[in-house]
Image (cartoon, rainbow, N blue to C red; front, side, top):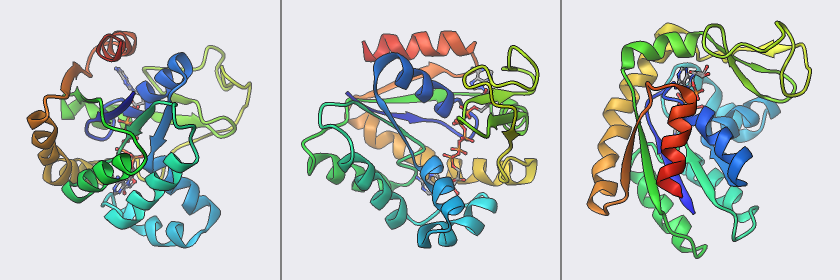
Length: 214
Ligand code: AP5
């Protein structure tokens, strides 16, 4: 099964994608994670993407679509894909269709996480991850069981994203409204959109998504 998780910054796409990976053996294809890895490694793509990401704007369609194609090529043909943060523009949506078709795949579901944008700033500015294994946490909503120790790997170092400040979050939301939300009708016309209340408890959101992909 190949699905898109769609929603504004902080909607819970990454949180839910990680859960689907753990429970269903699917692969998360997060263009945000791929770009952050490229920035960290100092690759040509990373050098082009760094300032754009820090400003909360969108990296070029060509760059992100090439990253997605490469990741799909590295996956077993029968493993399900969760597209997290891609596509984000109409040209990316077109590219995804061609990328999937050329690899004998098709899109099964687009799951839109519906959220109240006012709550998202709190979600994003409070989140952090384990610097060792990448597990996500939040100052208020998802703390480690033992303060300062990662539940998953026992690591003690945590980090925050440079684009998780309020000003940049507002720009990212404006980009979502202007360029990403308008691609939904493409998938509505195909009858593959399902909507989930992204403001619900995380476990309830997961259960709703699992019911859709069952
Ligand atoms: P990207 O990394 O994709 O960021 P984003 O879309 O802004 O999404 P986030 O990761 O911020 O949010 P999320 O929905 O995954 O929420 P999360 O699960 O973490 O992109 C970053 C940048 O890269 C872009 O701005 C752009 O520059 C570039 N980029 C990436 N892809 C691109 C593309 N395709 N084209 C062009 N440029 C691209 O949850 C947030 C917090 O809320 C967490 O702390 C979590 O614990 C908490 N939370 C989650 N769910 C719940 C819940 N139900 N209740 C309470 N708290 C919750």
